[in-house]
Length: 251
Image 1 (tube, rainbow, N blue to C red):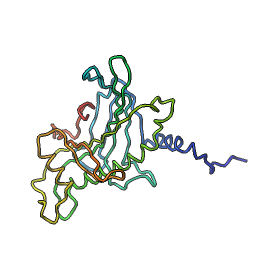
Image 2: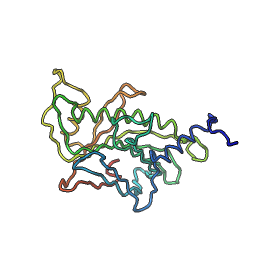
Image 3: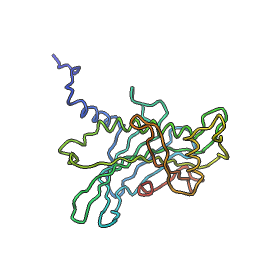
Image 4: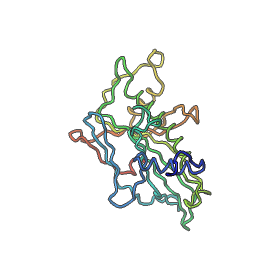
């Protein structure tokens, strides 16, 4: 008689579920070889079809005798259809998780920073009439993505003594990266108008200003005023349907 697989030991569920997510290609750890890269593809018809992120093995950045080094990189395929887990389209394309360690001159690890980049590809940024604008859609996707990442982080096995993170401080920071070809937004609703949306207005200010990054405030399950650093990156060569960028340029 074959052994039933219906009974599961509750303390092993986290590890089994994590392995199942890896097996389904929902989560993938990236090998930090010299020629490794991450490819993000737009699954819908678009004239911006993919973004390639390379140079994943970053060289150390020294600041007051402290260096910052990349320890691990993971990619989460947020658009992948998984029953009970998928967000039905309201999600960024992918999330790139970069675990950086800060090390002093003596080689002692001071702490870790987990940079979570939510990636969205748009051929065109538009203020659509009678429909949700592109910027409002992006804000909703970032909000959904942050909540899903928070949930997935509770599954992470960072407390396992074999991982050597159990006594370490790990700080989390969200980044929202929007790659796009064209900005076709000329104006948005003003604060006293009925169609005004604060998140949309904030994103438009970030897009319109020359600053490289800025903060968007969103309500998540953990915080009423959670923060994500947002950056818009325009395709420098729109005759091509792809972009290439270094990982360090996202961080």
